[in-house]
Structure formats: C-alpha cells, structure tokens
Image (spheres, helix red, strand yellow):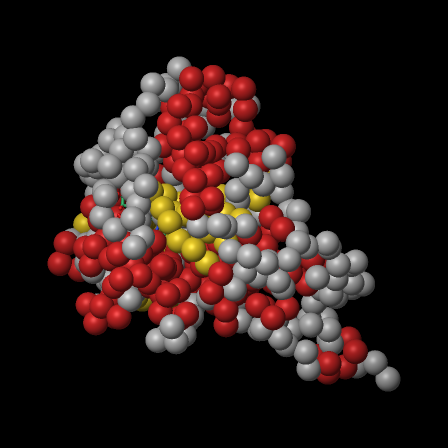
Length: 440
Ligand SMILES: NC(=O)c1ccc[n+]([C@@H]2O[C@H](COP(=O)([O-])OP(=O)(O)OC[C@H]3O[C@@H](n4cnc5c(N)ncnc54)[C@H](O)[C@@H]3O)[C@@H](O)[C@H]2O)c1
C-alpha cells in the first residue's frame, strides 16, 4: 500500500497535564507507576507507548523502532498530574486506602504523591449511590457546576505552567442512563444543564467542560458520558479528540483474545459463563444493581460482535452469555475471575475451556490510562477530532460513529492502532501479504 503524506503534527514540547476525575485505585496506581518509572524503580510494563515496537516497511528492511521513538509523544518527565474527587484524600492516602501497591513501594514516592490533592468534585449521590463524598462543588445549575470545572482546568494549566491538558475519566461507574432527547443535540444538552435535568450526570459535565476547553477526553468507565450525539458534535465543532469507553482490562480483555481464536478456527460456541469476585471500592459501587447494569451492558456486547452469529448461525446462534460480579471485600483489588466456555467441534462434539484469571485490576488499568493520555494528546496535536476509533484497543465498548459496529477483536484493534500511527507518519500500512517473498 502506498504511504500517505505525513500529517503536520504539532511537536510535543512543554508540559502535559493529565487530569483524572476520580483519584481512586486506578488513578493513583497510574500516577505512582509513572513516578516510579521516572525514578528508575520500575519499567512501564503493559504500556504500548513505552515498550512496544512498530514494524515499518518490508520485513527485510529490519526497521522496528519503539512507538515512542516513531511518533512524537509527550515524555514521561513532562507529565503533571491532577484530579477531582468527592473524597478529599491526597493521592498518597487514596493509594494506601486502595491497597493496590504495597507500603514500601508507596513510601519511596510518598512526598510526591501527597502533593497531589484532588479538586472538589461535581458529584451527586443519585448517580453513584455507594459513595458519600464531602468534597463537592455547589452551584445553582448543572451548567454552573460545569463552568466551575472549566475554570479548574484553566487554573490547573496556569498554576503548573502547562502547554496542554488531557482528561481521562477514572471516576466511579455511574448508574445506567439511556440516551434521550437531552443528549441529542448541543442545544438540547445545554438546555438540560440549565434546567438541572436528571438525564445529565456529573460524568457528562466533565466531558462537556473538557471539550469546551479544547481538552481531549477519554472515558474509562462504562457509563454514558461523552458517547452521545450532542457531545460528539461538540467535539467535532471544537476539534477535540474523544474516546471511550470502559477500560478493557481483565476478563473482557481475555474474551477478546479467546473469541477471535475460536472464530478463526471455525469452532462453535454454546455458552460462556463469567463470574468474578472483587473487593475494592469499584466492586462496592458495582454491587449497586443500577451501576452493575451499566457495566453488564458493556461486558455483554463483546462476544456477539466478534462472533457474528448473523453470519455464522451454525456456530454461534443462540449461545448463552452470563456475566456476574460479586462484591467480596477480603479480595481487595485482586480480582479473581472464572470463565467456563462451552465450545463445539467437529461432528458437534462438545468441549470446555476453563480460565481462572487471578488479576490485579488497577495494575492492568494503569498503563491503559497512560497510553490513552499520551495518544489522545498526540491525536489532538495531529488535528484528529471527534471519536478516535483507533483507540478501540483499550476499551470494552469502543465508541464508533453512528451506524457502524464497534470492532472488538483485540488483534484487529491492534492492527488498526498501528496502521493509524503509520498512516499519520507517512509510512506504508502493513498488510502482511508477503508477496515479495514469492516474486521471481
Ligand atoms: N480497574 C479496572 O480494571 C477497570 C476496568 C474498566 C473500568 N474501570 C473503571 O474505572 C473507574 C475507576 O475504578 P477504580 O478501581 O479506580 O475505582 P475507585 O472506586 O477506587 O475510584 C473511583 C474514584 O472516583 C471518585 N468519584 C466518583 N464520582 C466522582 C465524580 N463525579 N467526580 C470525581 N470523582 C468521582 C470516587 O470517590 C473514587 O475515589 C470505575 O468506573 C471502574 O469501573 C476500571
């Protein structure tokens, strides 16, 4: 395939601020990890932007630079962290409460973490019922609250002498909200903010504020936020990069690895039963049926789109898919997931696959936050506005433009991500055709 002309991409000079609504387990593990890497205490394991290479040109060219040497990304040393949370704990206290990283690890960077103090949040108990925040903004209308968030972004930028800012939502999962008239156009959305309409949740206000400030927004939770026609239009009008939703970390990541493998071999599926025990605050929030419904919707959509029962009815029509999350405090952040997969082979013979994944949720999510922040900033500097479909790789429910199906297959998502980088940098896209091998 012919290379395209390279895009004009603004350089990654100066400092990049990363703001996270939510300074809980994921956000503090992410921040602590970046600081540990900067000090040489650990390697950025799990991060494509830091560790992955990208093949360029023909195999015989032997060109496989690191992604971070190939595309102009912000350097870790140039990152500055901040956030909002209805719980006023600084990042050190929040990290200790989350219990993901051990004390010795945290002690080494304690002064750095305790210097990161959350700004007061836009928070409403009706949308996250299991958290009782005290560090909360007050305002007459939802627009007033969102305007305060805009001011926070500006102040954070000025205070830290930043060149650019990105926002990555690491807040709790809000209750399930169906997109309605209020989310259909920018005008409807803003009128709904003015009259404090229930359909406008805090997460949507952060998204609106970020876009209005020209700041890229990535949504790590499954709730409705930036994935509405109103905010997508706003992002296009304001030329802002947005993406979402729901970090693809443990069990769903495994699904998007195994399901393409079954389909590639044309093996059938009768059922997939997934259950989890989880004891962190996220687990407690998801113990509320309304928040769980949001998560369930996000987790269930994956298999159908990968397996395409409408194309392969003999293999995949009517398979049953069950997902359970059980809040079990002793397990903390160390989630345990079990999957029982009933598959069907030659002459209809049944087989089973069992997966027992003892994962650490925030350890898997932290490098995703880093990559999304750096790639969103890169996309913004490359003039890529609206939904960044090439970042689907990182999400359980990838956002796509209306009328299109999201791509869930991890390997197609990876190809899309790398080909997007090649395209933007004016390199040939890789087809793995291999014809050059057979030519005389
Ligand atoms: N860890 C994973 O593997 C993973 C994967 C996918 C999605 N997620 C999502 O990421 C989010 C964060 O997960 P976590 O484990 O860090 O949870 P957590 O409970 O430790 O942290 C969430 C924080 O968000 C804060 N918060 C709630 N509403 C807020 C608001 N309106 N504004 C600002 N802050 C707010 C809470 O007070 C809390 O401190 C959750 O929505 C979770 O579902 C996590």
